[in-house]
Amino acid sequence: MASTITPARWVEIKKDFPTLARTFNGKPLVYLDSAATAQKPQAVTDAVVAYYTKHTANVHRAVYELSAEATERFEGAREKLRKFINAKSTKEVIWTKGATEAINLVRYSVGLNLKPGDKVLSTLMEHHSNFVPWQQLARRGVEVDYVKVTPDGLLDLADYEAKLTPNTKLVAVTQQSNVLGTINDIRAISDKAHAVGAQVMVDGAQSTPHMQVDVQAMDCDWFAVSGHKMLGPTGIGILYGKERILEQMEPFHYGGDMIKEVKILNTRWNDLPNKFEAGTQPIAEAIGLGAAVDYLNGIGMGNVRKHEQDLTAYAMDKLGKDASLTIYGPRDLSIRGGVVSFTMKKVHRWSTTCTRRTSWTTTRTRATSARWRSPTSRRGRTTRCAATASSSSCSSTGSSG
Ligand code: PMP
Image (tube, rainbow, N blue to C red; front, top):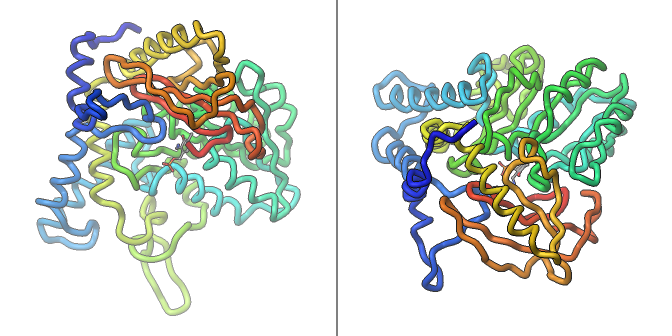
């Protein structure tokens, strides 16, 4: 699909991000760490400030006008997120602190019902946040296994099918790898998991900011979103879950808005989504994330994806000309996002150089001579050095970056 945004318009868009106007050592800021956290457009900051300067009140707790305004903005943001990922209902959209907390919510609640002999399947291309929570279940006798990655950076689907057994209760997989940029075919993974009765937890931290996401089309059971990676504030994200499944799950935290009725010996949980939202929520951050969704919709996710594909092609072409570099991940841009990981002979990963500037934001490269190892290996970490316009990252295999 062709972009409907002209190159001149991309230059204008860059001006929406005040931090990108900064200079360091007399040079324009080159920011390529968007996969770690994205810069914020002014509209997001304005929405947060408006809550604190005009609409501050708690939500869901009162009928006075100020509280009604805050509630309307807070719930309005939830509806924006629902639409953005195409969930059926706002009951399926739970505010969390970020993608990590969303995954840990599922890990806690589902983990309560797992017993020795049950199996959880993750993959070797996960971020730590979708790896360690499952790994730790092994201490309780749950079998935890990991799908391998092929040399060209794809999930090894033959290995996946071989490891998927009737004992598999949950499959945890990323939609877009922060290590390799690989975009996984979640629908195919879900169909196979569901065929053996397993449920599917998808880490959408890197996909949601960069491509059109549709949780119904993917047919995943849970989907984790990170707000600060999609131009929103820090400390906010969402967990999407199918309503039927969320109804059956135990709450994660207790207290505050997640309670419907308390008696001395018993408590009834609130209706979805509040059942999973204990305590006062990050109201300003949720409203800010709603503004980020408006901003991304204004550009159009198709345009975001196309622009990133162009920049990724450019980065891979230029980096590919350097014989000392080995680039990882798929070459086919239809199945990769903007992260470009590479190793460079004889350069350590913290030897950082700033090299390129693109029309929207800029490219930072870091390199290392370390080689690919499994996420469980601390020695021999591989550096992924990402280089794209709106997305970049630099972290270790099985990374926390
Ligand atoms: N998953 C992936 C693929 C990520 O890249 C990240 C952040 N680097 C996370 C999860 C964690 O997200 P959050 O910071 O929202 O907890």
